[in-house]
Length: 320
Image (cartoon, rainbow, N blue to C red; front, side, top):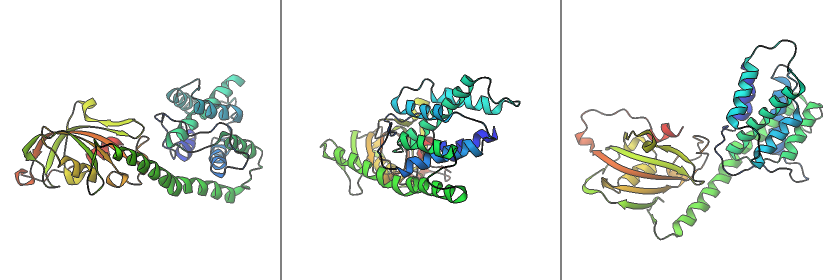
C-alpha cells in the first residue's frame, strides 16, 4: 500500500484527483513541438512507476490508453473502479509473479492510466497525450529529453510546480474575470463597490438583519462554481449553518448583510472575495469565481450573544 500511495501522492494528489470535471483539458495527440508541461507530467508518472513501485512492470501503452480514454470520455472503468482495483492490487501480498497473466498486467496498467487521467482532468491541466506517452517511452528506455538522475527530476518537478503555482492561477483568474464580466452585463445583477454581484430574491425582515461582521447568523445555502458543479449545500445535509460573519469569506459577510431575517440572496463572488489563489477542492480551484444562494434564517447581533461562539470558516470547511 505504501508504494501505491507514493505515486498517488506525487502525481494524482498534486493534481487533486477527482472525476468531477465535466470538460476535458487533455488533448488527445498534440502539437509537433515538444510540450514541456505534458512531457513533465508523463515523466513524473513514469519515474514513479519505474522507481517507486518496487519494479512492478506496468504496460506503459495501456497506461497511456487509460489517460486517452478518460480524455475522450470513453474509459471502460470509472475513476472509483480504477482506484479500488489499484488499492486491491498494491495492498495484496504478491509472490515472485507480479501478475496473474498478461491481461491482468494490462488491466492494472489501464487502471493506473484512468486514475492519472482523472487527476489531470480534475485539475484542468492542458496536457497533450502525445507528449505524456512520449515521456513514458523515453523514461522506460532511459532516454528522457530532460536527461537522467537528479537533474532530470528537478526539471520535471520544476515545470510542474511552475504550472500549478504560477501559470494556473493566472489562467483561472482570467477565466473567472471573463465569466463575471458577462454576468455583469445582465441588468438583473447589481454590483457593489467591492465587486460583489448579487440579486435579492427576498428582502426579508428589514428590522432584523446583520449589521456588523461580528453578528452571528444561521443560514441555508448552496454553492456552485462557474461550470455549474455544486461543491456544497446545507440543504442537502438538511442542516443549517451558524457562524459569525467575520469567520467566513468576505463575499459572504457583505452579501448576507444585504438581507433581513427570512430573506434570500444570490451572489457571484470574484476570487478576491472568495478563496483567492487557494485551491480548496476539485471543484474550487485557484482563483475560482463562486456562486452562492443564501437564505437567512436567524440573526443574533453581537450584543445579544452571551459568549463568543468559536466558529471555524464554515463555508471553507464544508467545501473541502
